[in-house]
Length: 121
Image (tube, rainbow, N blue to C red; front, side):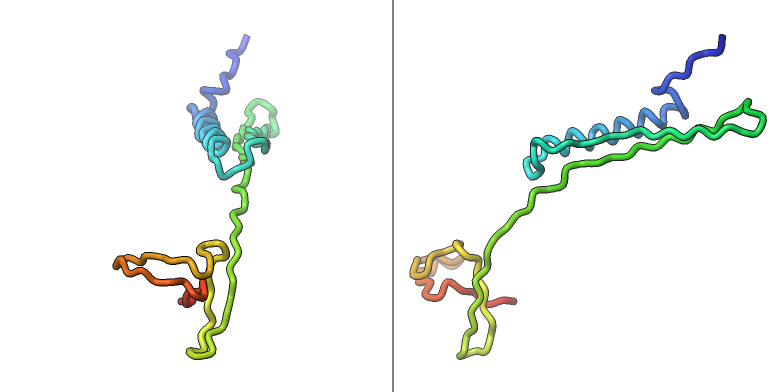
């Protein structure tokens, strides 16, 4: 009786290596808080068998396919304004700082945010 083929040893362990690498990607994707926890992930090992004309030798091709959960979208809002004195368009992230709220910049200078806007660079 012919020896049974062990999937872990097939192609000198290359199929098993592909599986292990992709399995690691799956568990990292599941653990990533930026992906939906309940989303399904898929790891497929596709094997193609191509026999020669005499049917005594078969070429086996194996590859893994990976389908992971994509990152959840991150959203924010930006408010735009136009400075008529300088002619520049200004933008600020909405909700970043309330109009009239005091802020302390890097040089410990206290200033009032009168517009809530910053220059777009």
